[in-house]
Image 1 (cartoon, rainbow, N blue to C red):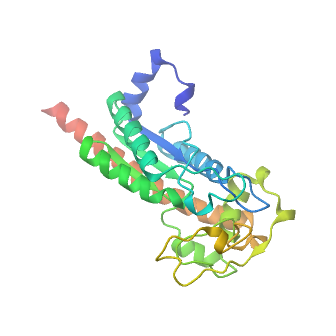
Image 2: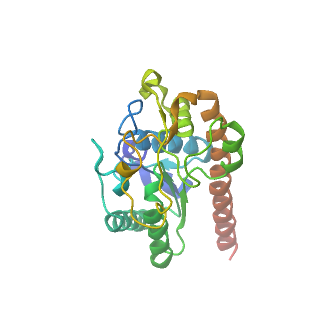
Length: 252
């Protein structure tokens, strides 16, 4: 269900019934020659839609800008600070709680947002402790990614416009992928890249961190569906807990 398509006259009954909001959080940044600037938005939106289909939650309008400090100098990238993102997410969460939501699942399409999402969740934990907040970034996919990957990861933590992320796009938003322009991008990641601020133009000229030519829809489907299983299980468990607590209050 798309929250923005609802109207004020009817929405409160639906909020009371479902109590779950799903917020896609993305970014606008370079993703090589074969993927669009809005790749992270597309991935977050379409993941959120699939999660809503499994859980019955409302999909909120996408938050389309993220913290892209590392790629801010690449053509097309738009960066916002962690501080701005934290404040906005916390305000959105508090407003949702006021409206009657009790579960907020932030579906993140951009790893650079991870710090801000986690901190916003902590802020909300203090402000509105009965709002269950999730910050999802492809949970449950470590093993399946290792199974399907044909090329070694360029980095132990992040991937970008490579075999894996391009496979995500081929599964979720294939119409926006131009595989004729996919490249094998081999970044030079210095030893101190994880220990000091390192703009990505020092590592790559393409913003592709790996071999995008090895991507496939089948790989993307296998990984994404595994992640959706993990996300849906956590959200539905939280819903069941809410239902149990509500029944207890009725009995009292």
